[in-house]
Image (cartoon, rainbow, N blue to C red; front, top):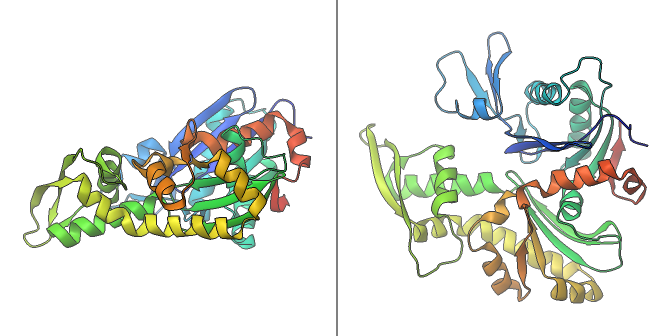
Length: 340
């Protein structure tokens, strides 16, 4: 049974970290970025403050992202970041070490899962419960996954995308891709470099994606001014990029996700496919907000697709739901490497 007084639900994402505290709701929503001095290993900034320093740090300060493709990429930085936020949530020093419900990608290896367990334990957590992120996202989206009926959830994160048919609290068929918002940003960087001989940063690419990004061509053509470094002269230059161009840049990563959805549908029992056709495809995660995605998926699969309410917070809300209702832990929701 989870502790009465302290408990955290954590979505340790590639792009953002979100933390849910028992009886308080979501208390942390920050970028998964750390700034440090490599000579001393001392942390200079964490979260939003560190993200604002990306690409702008002087010699002697590095910015890095401890997570990559849904897994721990830098153990020490991940531990420091998580410890910082746990201390931010629990300011009292005499508070008990909180029990944790931790969301993890179903596509990572057992070794990567064990590393996640150890990082959270070292950062101050105890009795860590691992839950597949797509299961948590389904719960956070308000779906009743305990019944013998099919739910198709597509969780689009920063580093990974998971497509899963869920029934009776379990995953029936799934695909996990190490493709997410980051790969979309990288595709935009490559397109601008190839088309305009202009080098832009990944943060700039993300801003473009949010501002005018679309994966379904519409009659209303939008544009944005993009500033970067000219690869020929080395001098600053700006160009105007249209939403049609961003659509072209995003075709490759999005088409892989579409094929994964089709593959999961092919592996799903016919009875559950019938349920999915009635209920529709539910989109969660920050990538669900990409303009035109539901319309594209509906066109490609013939199944209505919907963006869940508050998609970016679905996974951490699901972890919080488990935290507030501990009996859910006995319902078969834990991942393969269950606790530490």
